[in-house]
Image (tube, rainbow, N blue to C red; front, top):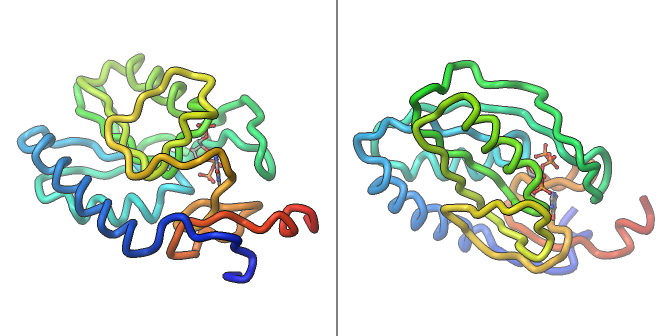
Length: 180
Ligand SMILES: O=P(O)(O)OC[C@H]1O[C@H](OP(=O)(O)OP(=O)(O)O)[C@H](O)[C@@H]1O
Ligand SMILES: Nc1nc2[nH]cnc2c(=O)[nH]1
């Protein structure tokens, strides 16, 4: 699997360090606010697990499964809610955890949904931001790294279901796409 990677962009250590840094900021920002921290599945599962352990104040967690990519690397422009939250969100301080923001369609849809559900606040924490690809005006509040306009995999991010279990974020070799 490692042989399919052209370049490692963020190592396991880079990711650990940024999770500690963002976690410490979140601890300060959410002290006394009892946030509901929401993991957007599947890609954010590893970042969620790392980031919540760095939030050193009371926080509840929940999961949503949302899909915006039908196959491979191209956006379909459609957002599907596959699994909704287990708890009501009215009046809550919501912190959405994402692995990547690309076109912004997924987050734009989610922020609208939470505002419609009358939350007290909604903020976004993403490991990766790819601002060059934005078609919706979504601005994350906490960003791990700004990535170039390349399709990245690893640390939760997949290509056709694979590579999520890589401990780092990297770029696939072109021949991997060509052979698929
Ligand atoms: O900004 P956008 O263009 O909307 O893209 C970002 C979304 O794409 C990825 O999810 P994906 O739908 O691939 O599902 P997954 O997390 O299950 O891999 C990622 O986890 C974000 O949710
Ligand atoms: N795996 C992966 N999923 C994405 N979804 C939106 N952008 C990306 C990306 O660069 N990699």
